[in-house]
Structure formats: structure tokens, C-alpha cells
Image (cartoon, rainbow, N blue to C red; front, side, top):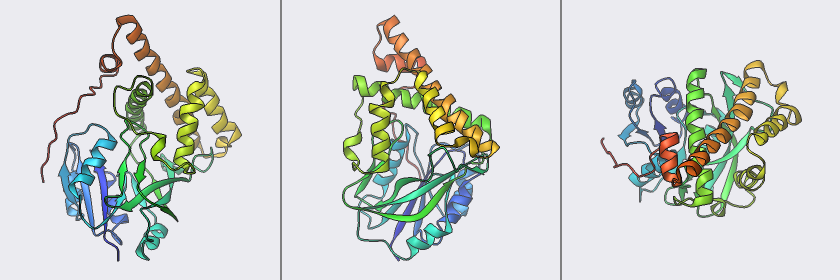
Length: 304
């Protein structure tokens, strides 16, 4: 069977890490967990489940995952990118075990549950994501938010899925998306001011689902008035794409992620732009003052 290394990024993922590792046990030659400072028993649980654990300070997802790739540079293996709150379905595991085609990467489906309830409407899922690729032929885009894997070569597709089923409470979800909103503001401002290197649409295949959504977001959605666009997007998801037909908890996801989160991004963006204008500040200085995010790289910390 093909050698496959599964990479999982963690910080306080004791609730999920055993499930994630167990879901890849049938096909993974090794599981590499990159922890960024867990204060719960994530590390102990990962090691007990057979994973190798490395430690590295967090900057953003792209930086963390690409650092993980650097740790296995030159190894003859495929890489499977899995979030701690996700798990691989038995269908996908069986497809992988049958063998991998001679391509650079493989896209798979991704579905999501919110508060334990599957999201079936709203035009969101399943979404195709490139999560499996030959080592040395793929990297994650250098972006602060909405990063995708870019591979050098042809891409195949499997019908199997991963399921995003994070079981943390709603307060955790709100805090996470508050952080996401700040990261997205950084990307939006960087598109205008160019204060950080950033890979964008050019690295994605034109027919990719991710590429299409990126183009719509950056060239259509971004041109709409701030605030108003959040409402329009929510109505599209909830009414036009039938999000209201989802279950009670899944409907809450459409409201929170489809409206509240998008409006929060716009509100934070307005706050940073106001600071730039009022203080004649650079975008980097404004981001640090308003969002509390320092954009200078932090020193690496490596430990077995």
C-alpha cells in the first residue's frame, strides 16, 4: 500500500484527536501531530494513539502546515491534510486503501455538522477540497485566511468524504470565528496594500471549486457595500439555496456563519480603516493596534 503521512495541527484538541487518528488508522503509515501549545491532554492522547508529536509556535494555518511539510521534506510519501475536528469516512478510507492514481494530488468531498447536526442545504456542502497529495508536489497558500493546497501536476478526485464535526461549545465557535474575522481582514487589506507576500488565484486551477469561490469573493462580493453584502449573502444561502430547510441547529449555523460572521468581518475592516485614516497609520500598525495581531514572524520552537 502507498506510504501516507497524515498531518494534523492541534492546540487543545483532546475532545477530537483520538477520533481523527482512529479514522486514518487503516491507511496511514504515520500520523504527525503539530501542536502549538496545548494546555489539555491533547499531546498525551495523540502519543497514546500512535502519533508522533512535534511542537511549533503558531502564526497562522498556512505557516504551521508548511512548517510540518518541511519536517518531512525529501521523504517518499503522500501527505493527507486533516483538521483535528474532522474525521475520514469509511468510504474514503476504503478508496485510499485500494491505491492512489499517478497524479500530484487528489480532491475529496468535505461535509460539515454544526452542534452535531448535518448541514444539508444552503449551497455549501459537500465542497471539494484538495487534501491528499504527493510530498514535495504540494504546499498550502501563503495566506492568513481561506488558504488552499496548491499542487504541481494533475489532480484526480475521490468520491469519499471527510466530515467536519467539531464538538466544542458555541462560545468556542464564536471565539474561533472572531479570530477568523481578524485574519480575513488582514487578507482583505493585504490585497490593497501588499504589505505581506500572498499567493492567490493564480496558483489554483481555473475549474477548481475553490478557485471559482475565490474569484467570486474577491471580484464580486468584495465590490458590494460593506454590511449590505453580509445581508445579501445570508438571504442567498437561507432563502435561495434553501438553508431554512435544515434542522434547528443547522439553521443557526446559516445565521451565525452566513450573516453574523460576514458582518463581523466588515465591521472589523471598517474599524481598521478608520484607524488608518484617523492616525495616518500604516496598515500593519493599524492591524496591531485594532486587532492585536503582530505580523512580524515569531521565532520557531522545535521539540520532539
